[in-house]
Length: 614
Image (cartoon, rainbow, N blue to C red; front, top):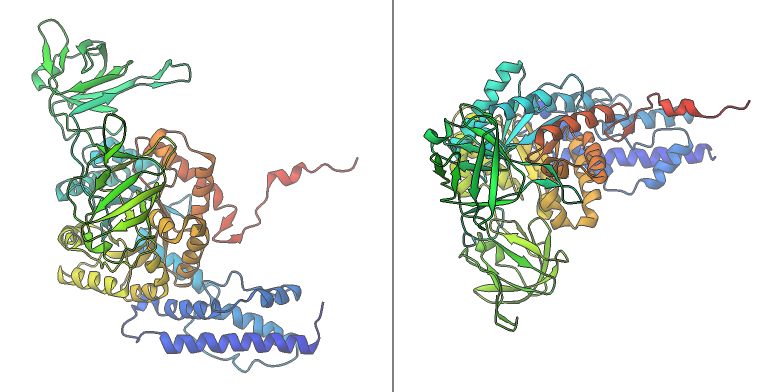
């Protein structure tokens, strides 16, 4: 190992040069003092110091420092200048020299202040840290939860720290009931929970499809031998607003007929396929009744249910089913530049295509720069295509990736154009309309598809116009452009009192490429840690568990990785309470092993199992 004065001098020169570049970038780039909120006085220069550091390939320097037993600066994100100064001080000691900037005063954070700032900003955004873990849990609410207090109570009891409402769905009346249910649960459990409302933003989506028949299919869960493992549970009610999320389906029936039902009653009916079926009543409540079904059945409006020969009721208000286009690899899909109703492929009697499947686009302006050969992804990357032809009315897309048996494309699903320049800005007119409610009732406003600092400035200006209340702002990074602009977005966000970043991995994976997602999400987390801004780890976390009740091993690993963020977001599903419970356990266990990317050397029981010599 070379510890000669010349080698130490060389390291001192490299690090001193780096420090000068760090200080220079901060001086050249830092916004005026009156623009940065006081909460980020030392966070903004630290971010710029980190950016200057990462403008170089420092791996050779790290190796040299490690060989000398010094810090490799691999954990410097939250206190960059302090780390460089500490290493320089040690090198000068080895060389019996003096650091000319040893007495330099800076607003940059030291080793304790950096992590403390991140904790303070996380608490300001997401509330006080839970007793048993540092990472918070956010849960996306289904519309049914607006009238399902037991669900809200259970989620809060199991560990939900922030409730997310997606403004792309439902309306202000549903959002208000969701918040009301949450506040009631908070009082009952003596717990607090933040409310994040997610503005839809300029998301490019598929247009409408014609509605299908008004039919409700309900089926039990079976094992591999076809035996019923879990009967289907149906909710029978005259109050359509109350629909428990655990129900396989809901039947609207007259109140006068329902009031005569008792536990253990059998209800006979003939379904839409003329198959005889039986419902077994298992519970009766003031809001409605639970009934179980052990055979698959199809209900339609007018299906008659018989409690006795004289006590008969007809099912009503079954909504039309959602239709879809089934697309296979090699198929042609016409993407129209207008949001007119689409239709499936039309075939002749020989199976030849008379007219390919087509679907509209809800933001036609987004297609302005698409060219032949550009890739098109649908539904968060589930379906891939390439543009083969285009004109003023439509794009002809050849499907290049789909499931072997075909993938379903439904209305209002996302469209990503990773090869095309898209110049859509946020907030949209719909966002502006929704913001009147959001700014009044939400603790946090999330802005989707942020691409520029102008988007952030527009949102801040609109919030200020709506009154003195200033909810926190979360920027959702879900486009390649947004990722490229992240340093500027972070500095811009520091002009607002409380903020954070959502790592929206669904669209981001499609935009950046699935093979790049891992490194992109790491870079986002590094930059946010340097800015002392909390990160929300989002999209498809434990999604299999939430939707089916059974997680995959990959999902568990992904959820465990999420603990390095300040919050993990879950999407809705019938098993969401169980999902929150499992995620709480995963986060609690992981924090004993690792914080951010720093390994914590806690005692391991397996280390005691080593065999000793006899």
